[in-house]
Amino acid sequence: VQLQASGGGLVQAGGSLRLSCASSGRTFNIYTMSWFRQAPGKEREFVAAIVWSSGSTSYADSVKGRFSISRDNTKNTLILQMNSLKPEDTAVYYCAASPRSSSVIMATRSYDYWGQGTQVTVSS
Image (cartoon, rainbow, N blue to C red; front, side):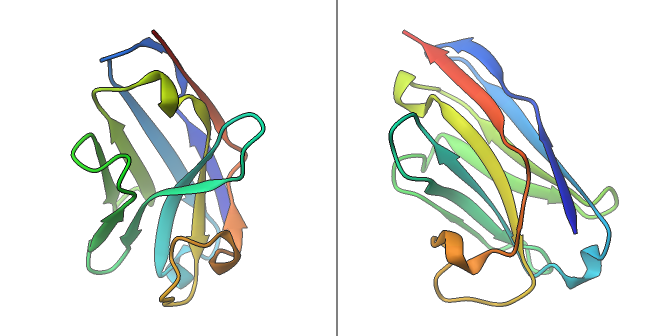
């Protein structure tokens, strides 16, 4: 499975961005897809996840009510709609995919496939 993230950029606080992650290859194996982010000097952290077949979603507390994760089955594309952005949302955002059901979806070790990352910068 290959993942290609896009859509990052520079936005003012309170603005919105829409990230996309195009998947290719053995995509029928994917069970869960997620977004993670990593700010300079910090560890990579979980943002949101979606179970590909059911559409069930999970969010980090820091983004609940502001971010929305979704998928387009026909295009094998993962979406992250980010609204009401804050300077603390600044990070490189990565999409990730797992072929297994896991009770630890917030852990990076649960994912086999990673995109290359896209930079999101929120100015105050």
